[in-house]
Length: 129
Image (cartoon, rainbow, N blue to C red; front, top):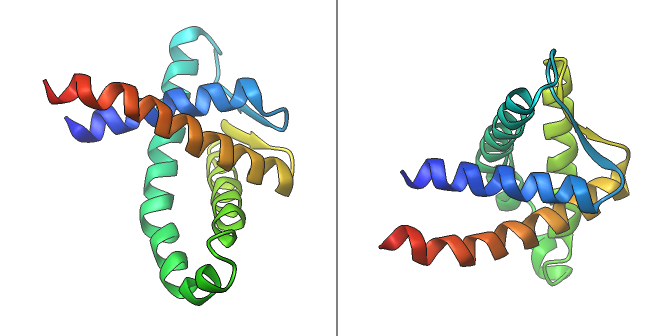
């Protein structure tokens, strides 16, 4: 249950991010209807969760000294690169996340994190009931 809630929160945050950040967009698969768009957002959220859980954790462990030196600001760069990695992986499938450049990825990752956090604050008390 917790996994599905986090997946839906990430998909909603990704949708809001595509509306806010100019360089981040999503291309739905073939017919491009509403159902395909929702499934595309859920699939991208799943890919983002896997990449963030596996690759992101390994990078954060290796880059721990950089986190200390930069007082955590390197996290913006790392999260932007992880978003670019998700865009690359989803583009291999022929649909998915489109990030126009490095700085769009950094801004997209920042907006995605803030929106995901805000939605989590709203949804968390509702799920606990």
